[in-house]
Length: 115
Length: 109
Image (cartoon, rainbow over all chains, first blue to last red; front, side):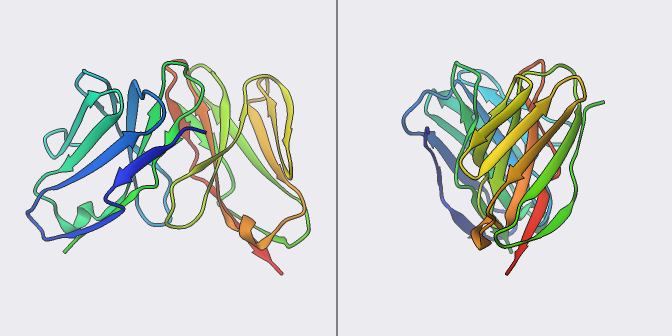
């Protein structure tokens, strides 16, 4: 199957700082990227959907000014958590989907801890 | 609204068979997926059903009945490494994945 990488795999930052997470599709063109958040023992929660070259579409309750998503190319999307707070500590997972809408390929996830 | 239901937790014995059910109500249907997720890791793809019937892949099989809005994942010859959460997801008319809350499967020796 196709491969999606995420970087970093884990990060610890101080409250008030910003953190950028990169998501790359390594062997396919991800025309659509999805960003999920998962709190412990809970299911995946879709945060936003982005199409290459377009602004992301955010799910209800997700602050677009806090979670900045950039999908400038077919192989790279970034999520920036601005002014992070401890409640933003979570497991962030991206997934990419190519032009044939068959399957989403997930990255390994990034564990963010805000102290 | 859109809704996917699956049991929260199940327990089974190593070497046995377990069936995890999933019922759904979504706006449109463009396929049903099963994913496996180990603690602290991202989901990995297990199976995809878009037509009624059974899809078999090694020890894992997945069944779909579109008229009943129902699917199950069948795991045979359970191994300890199968202890994980199993996520049912339906792709709706907008090709968005709607996720169930996941079923935590505990395998006992």
